[in-house]
Length: 113
Image (cartoon, rainbow, N blue to C red):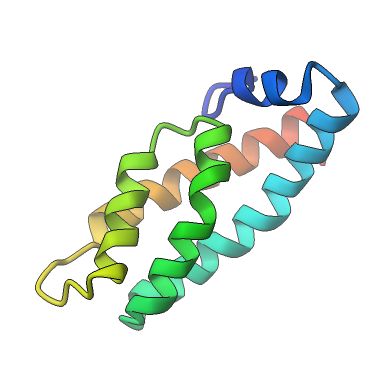
């Protein structure tokens, strides 16, 4: 439990309300799994604006669950925001994707989702 994510800030936000924590975990699983796919597709197709929007949308949730990849996600976001055609962002995308995948698997297991 809480190997690839942390609940400290989630618990603080939820004031230790277990039902609300569960709701936040469910939302993480639903939203972030869609957003990371959107981000991967955008980077692959070099759709800079879409990559920016997907990464930007993910930031608060990634930060709240403390995945430890916020700086990497911001680099991917900025790649899209500033249309950095001369930068290969694949490595940072892979770091973000791997961390999200690990957190999704663990949260699903921890919360029986």
